[in-house]
Image (spheres, helix red, strand yellow):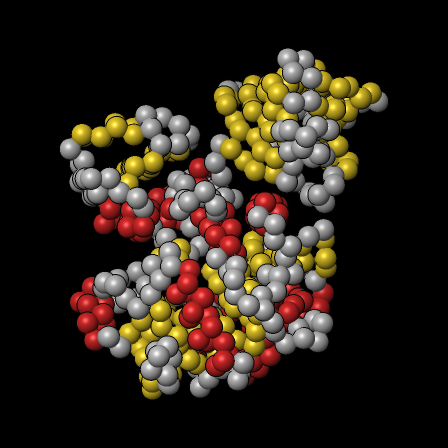
Length: 473
């Protein structure tokens, strides 16, 4: 059996303002109508002997991850929640330990959740080519045949050729991201592939190699798996045990040290969408080689990526630029400088700006809310509650709330009473009153909430009951 292991951590800081800490690139639809996570799982359809996936994600993203799997009909083997990020070696160790719990030894197909692969058949062929080597206990990495010299990727040098038809070879060495001159030499030589970060191996094989080469990672991972707990759809790990695990990539921890490494090269229109320049490269271009999304008008604009979420963008006389507008931020950068966007994110974090963390629209397991307007003593939100979902039973010490139903129906718990609200009906929740909002219908509930009070922060919540087991809403 092949068990997919989807690595869905990461923050995607180079794609700010589209990607935020609480809404990273793997969970947004930046390539097509599906999110990157969904695309990663959907492209596995047709691979023989495929089992349910293990998804490793940040605890902050758990409900969005579970909801996105549900929307495409995926029932996961496990969703492992990392309390903090610790790179790929611990994530793979945890997934492998979880995979062997039932005394089985599946093949693990490890895939980052944020890649684009345009030619699915070539990808499937590469997986098939790696299968027979992985079944013999080897550690397979998938190298991408370079189309151009790239300085944003690590490289892998081919060793002894094992099979002419598939190009399977031993791994001579891994190399860090090169400068442009070195990257050109690598590409022209034909001896190097881009390091894709995709792997295949038996669970027992990678665990044995981790035991040998990275015991400082393997031993604490064993302990946190042993003390982990199942919570709804999620497998939770103790922060106390997890935070001290060494942060390291599987490349450094194992692949650069093992004698079992084999590389399968392929070229299937692969891209890791690590920057806005990558989005331009993979996007649908107009006659001026622009990628335009949303409400955009241009005059004498060439080779640019322009994306609008809520406002008209009018651009004149620019070339090779990136302009990205969201409801709370605008990014402007030359295309060849977009790698530096992460420096803006660092400034935002240093200033404790919310724009580094989340969008105006915030997703919750029950739906979402979006801030429409906010001043010192009032805030207006648009709240969407999914069919059959309900918020926690709660109260606030510093604010009152006014709710008006725009569409759908709501059951409102207010103190000791329950009220059914329909379209154009409203209610008032006084400060300190125990309350709950629920959608009993089959369509989404949309309502406008007006908060008034001396403090309007999201931490002004005292929760008494919550079906999702959260401490924060």
